[in-house]
Length: 259
Image 1 (cartoon, helix red, strand yellow):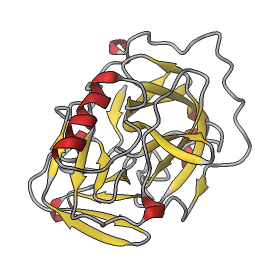
Image 2: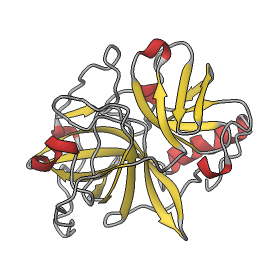
Image 3: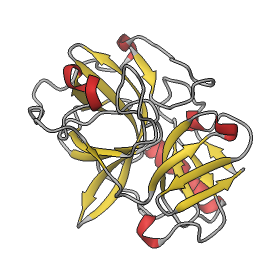
Image 4: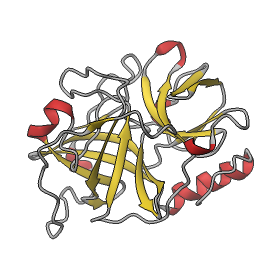
């Protein structure tokens, strides 16, 4: 079953749909995923451009990423409330009423992305991530989120964690698999990272020339056999999502790079 991995207790609760609705439904059988490592994913203070999106009146949390000095990329379903949103990073907290959504915020929406827009020069240079343009099965990506550390209890929300995983398949989304017997503790081994409640909107990064580039945005997750599947909206090479970002980039003069 799939469900959002946002932390909105009142707004989202637990939304479920059948895994049979997923295109393909199986990972590429020819793809060799890494064996689970013995170490858990890392709790980190790094990645200063990734932070916690706080809904109006504390209605829940998600994750977001500075993609320019005044724009934070997150999931559309994280931005359905009315009022002021806050973005909390290791370098401080900023707030805004301005948001734009591409998708409807539904649990089966491959356009589940949105932007929070702040005043110019909000982010420092070391917080801004550009977009990447390539993602394919077999690519190793870095996942970062500020969600929970236990899928069953949903405890630990607001804890920044990171790990890597191999792209298992691409259908409407970028999909990662994490062994479910590991995910009950802290969402997986460090080389098979997954997502938990509160991670919605968080980035999947590719790395090129030492730079971390945004290619995916955390959407939803669920069980697939003996694995958990974590779904990410494809902003790396899906043209409709990138065209929307280009349009908003021009409309609001955001200065996002790599599109």
